[in-house]
Length: 123
Image (cartoon, rainbow, N blue to C red; front, side):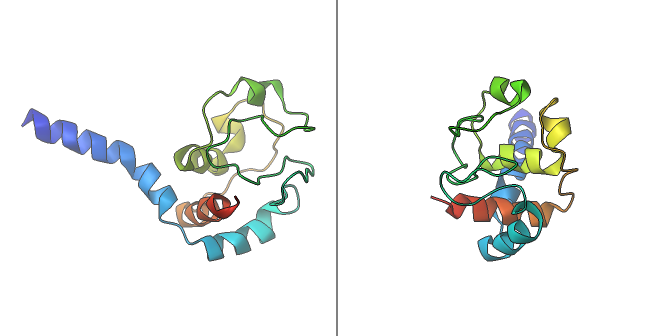
């Protein structure tokens, strides 16, 4: 019985990660162009209001050269995994308090999964 409880707990904890990885990168690119592109570039070395998101999956936060990050983002030490990006895109200011990003967040889980899938292709 205890093993089943532990197994269920593990599966539930993995659900956000799996959801973030089930996205459609083609749909995600369209969402990125519509919502994110005004402030973020998908090109290496091109910063806008926000930093370039080229190669963001697996990257340490606040790691893009020549971008002035908030102190809050500089203190964020966890790498940008699919799960971390999903949580941040859902509510940037709630996920990392004190960030400069004023975007209210992307509430739709499928759209977030698609955006994260697209960001995963930027290598």
